[in-house]
Image 1: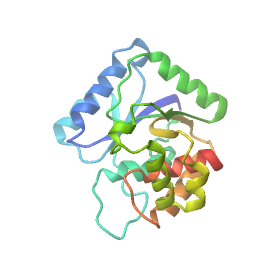
Image 2: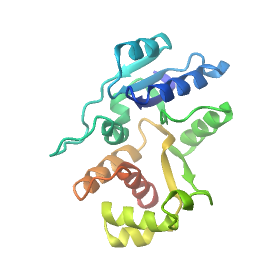
Image 3: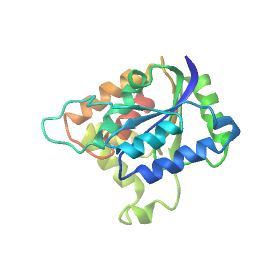
Length: 211
């Protein structure tokens, strides 16, 4: 079993970004031999070949949560994330990086891995004064309140909206950490109420803040 694996996901539309992520990892001596697992959400033959040549392992995740309506293929990345230990069975720690991320400084990887080793789950708050103009000019907390209320209830929204959102685009977790199962259960609960683009992120925040 590998000490850690970098996991990500992408389709043909995201492939240029996915290439940038993989190249940024491979550019570091520490990243030259790191295992990479890619959840294949609709990649082309040549794109799969390029990733294989970079040493990436491709996985077709399927639907980890059933829907009663057609959903875009990319949404598999959202509902698959709480189930990563099943899709990435060969790593003690799973380091997830969204395809539109790239590694600028390897110390960030080291910090995430150290955090996962210490607590089971390492993640970073999404917090910046520049957010407000990008959210229709409304205070960021207003959006958080609406998301928590839609996915769960008013009591959860009031309890958590003032906390900075923990961004599930970058995190590291031990494969046997209890967070995965709680995240999966809460995501399933929230998806029975509504389906939002941020559903899995909201569910993870409830798991980490209250579980």
